[in-house]
Image 1 (cartoon, helix red, strand yellow):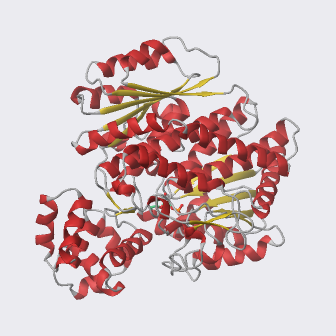
Image 2 (tube, rainbow, N blue to C red):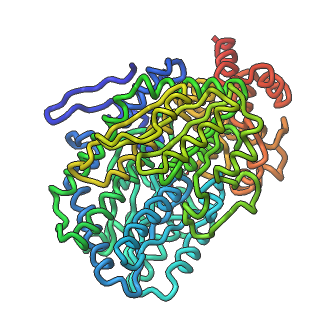
Image 3 (spheres, rainbow, N blue to C red):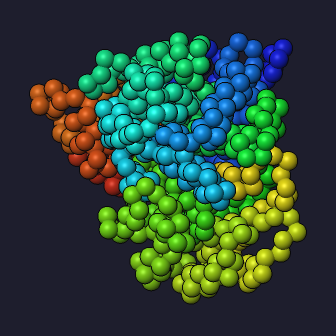
Length: 602
Ligand code: F6P
């Protein structure tokens, strides 16, 4: 495995932590030395590499480098924010806690908010949590990248959600400290300190926050962060931004960024709930113990390397032959399935049908702000009934079906659906979380129907932390491994970069240009030129194109496929866009097409 670790006086330092490692990039965009060869790895090794990467979430801080999850400052801020939530829980009148983000960050805001509101309802308490996702609820299930670039929309949405409130704790999530949508909201909070206290959650040090100008704004994300830092001295704003290391696939913040978001926010809200409802004050030790439970969850999950690898192989095989992967889930682990599936389009340029999630109970179970979305089109039909009508009739053994459930779900129902799916495909697998000693009725029946069953057994009373949160994290890690691994096996990744990245917002546009620079060795201007030619499908750029801004480019990119691979082939071979298209048609495995071009250059 690539990547050198060095032991210094305090802890082991990973190669990416050295100041001269990809110095121009923030941690969230760096490439992880541990996964440099992930595109060539076996399924087993892919899982091991992902495990090594995820383990970096809990790595302790090394001298003079980055603050980490368990760093004193981070734990203290978690405690301070938990105490603010506690105040609101104790006196919820006219108050709100808002979690907001774009893409995965918004989806996790939704998951966490609906989960904690449910816990409040069960205690007969007022719901105090609200979520915002850029692009609205349709972004929970589909890729809506453009709204991320709109700071004004972020601000207006927040204002609307908080109408009439006198006290709001606003938690903005941007893994890369980069989303203009969130920056607009944080700026708005600072302009109205009598109501709003802003909290920022992300995974870069503050000096690496994005400094690009934003449409209609005098501020950048970085300048917002700097103002928040000033305010944090008097606890009028809070920053929780440990480094968790580069993503396994560069920039894929749905992975570690998403997992760390879930861990951090659950630490905050669980501590506040325990302090309010069970008289357990928020303590430093309590936070560390809870963190340890998450670390154990990671270890327990990855202890099943061979089983995860088998799932990944099955899913990879389906995708390779143009067939599909379906997640059929129950309860909140089903939501993790919906989230993972929704990310495959923007991350790997996958078709919506390639990986698709379904949830028992549909939108009623999801309890999202806007209610049922099925009228938006078949992509938004998410119930098991929808699966039976829309998908099952065309399934065959080349499609992979993955059942996701826990022992508190209706196992009889799981068995029933497994029987229905088995009529069409033998390629059924189960991921099942059970509590020690609880033998589920009908589980044997399900096992007989499945080609593999990944059972994770949990101690009934974890030392700390809610079991459901651990099941959710475990499911997230598993599904991220399955969908990422399957797309790697499909040839969508070159080394550890998503070469077929969509160019649908400014962050992705910049990332695409950088990727072209890295792979071609050409200067930025030439790479951006190639990107635009590929995007507009022209061999000569017109004034119209060069005088348009990034927003116009990213809007055009919505209807294009393989923009970056095409640009790269053009750059490497000097061919026209049309020639590059036919080249990629002959060799649809992007990694191999690129390698052929690269080898011709040597
Ligand atoms: O725009 C794409 C994307 O990278 C998503 O994959 C991600 O979830 C979202 O942006 C938000 O990123 P961040 O949390 O860094 O603002």
